[in-house]
Length: 261
Image (cartoon, rainbow, N blue to C red; front, side):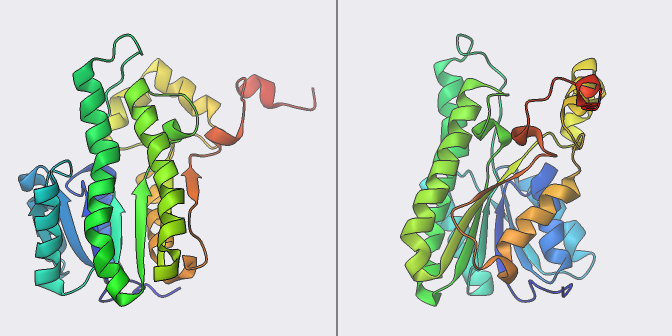
């Protein structure tokens, strides 16, 4: 596979200023992509872009709150003004609040649903007409294992399950226009924000339950780039769980895995 599979392609990554979003930006850029790094934290987006440009790679930073339709439209306009086209949209921006059903406030619910579900809707609605004009495009929604199994919280699980549903619906609607829509559902990943949890007793237990243990950012990025590239052109409407086997098993722990006993 060519190391320049995104040469001259234009990719919008929301929430690209930190965490996995930043890793996606680096992955696309390393393979020749022109990255639009959008983030509600403008300083974080600029930091990501500055590091990419130091390597001679083309990219721009855009401050964007994905829950605001006007800011989303402005993000799209800036991408088109700078590069003239949009080939890939990665709906990555999101928030997570661990809350029980009873502990979930109205504000918790509205914030997570607005960011994690309404945000991808607004961004996709704004980008898709420009892809339709060219008869080709890729939308990759960043979902979660929480949209497949119950493991995080009420609002987060609802938003990610909803995003998986939108992925299937949009794939059906947009296929005649040459646009593919898929989701990546990351599992427990060893990102800096998860480091404290990963080192805790609960985190160690999680690593034991997952057949392949905790994932790495590169594992998730590889899936996002695959679904964004031409080699996945015959795939649409799918949710790819990149989770080390977490959602495929009911695991009672490492002792239980010795099936020959």
